Amino acid sequence: MTPLSKELLLPPRQAHFVEAYCMGQNATKAAMAAGYSIKTAHVQGSRMSRNVKILSKIEDRMQDHQRRCSIT
Image (cartoon, rainbow, N blue to C red):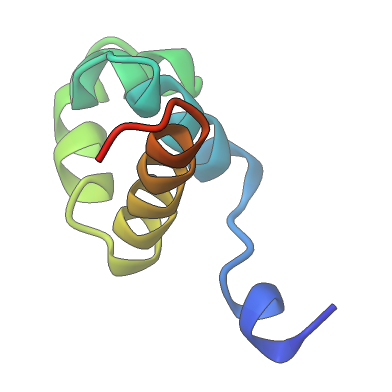
């Protein structure tokens, strides 16, 4: 594993948030899918959607999807 890829590893909840967010859910629904409580999902979703590492992973996933679908 390269130092860069190790640096971008996310904890399970954050990784699940990225997956749910990329499947078209909004930040609150993605936070709930990641296991955060309904009461705090809007706060956690907002917080995670501003996290630099999470944003980087979301951007990477979206670019991969565009490449696979030949979207330019």
